[in-house]
Image 1 (spheres, one colour):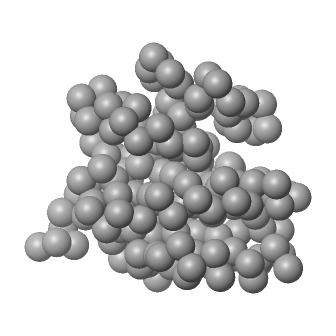
Image 2 (image 1 turned 180 degrees about the vertical axis):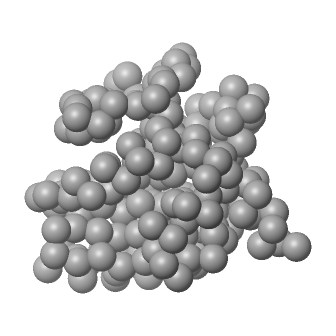
Length: 183
C-alpha cells in the first residue's frame, strides 16, 4: 500500500527555488539551454517547473561539479528530517564544486498551499527542482533502473562517477559518500 501511495505521488513532481539575497541562478544561467516548462513566482524565490526530459538534461550536465540530487516531498517525514543534512552539505561543500538539487515530489495542485510555505519557513538555500511529469513509470527507471519509486532517494553524480541511494541519510553518511566523489 505504501508503495502504491509513493508511486501515485510520483506522478507529479515539482521544481527550483532561488533566493533573491543570494545568486541562485542555477537553472536559468548555468543551464540556460534547459528551459523550464513554467516558472512559479513566490515572494522570495522562483520555482521553475520541469518535465522529466528537461530535468534529465540537468542531471546529465555534470561537468566540473558534483551534483547531489535528492528526491523528497513535504509529506515524507524521513525526507523532511534529512533536509538539514543536505543544506549543511551544500553550505560546507559548495566551494569544492558540490551542488545540491532538491527535487520535490509534492502534488502540483498543492504547490501554493503546501510547498511554497514550507520553502519559505525552512529558508532552504539549495536548489529545489520541481518536476511535473505524470509518466513516472517512464522516468523512475531512467533515474535508476533499480529504483522502486520510494523516497527519499538520492543520486550523487559527477563526470566520473554516479551512485544511487534509496534511503535516508545522516549528515556523516552523506558527507562520506560525497567525499568519495570529490577526491
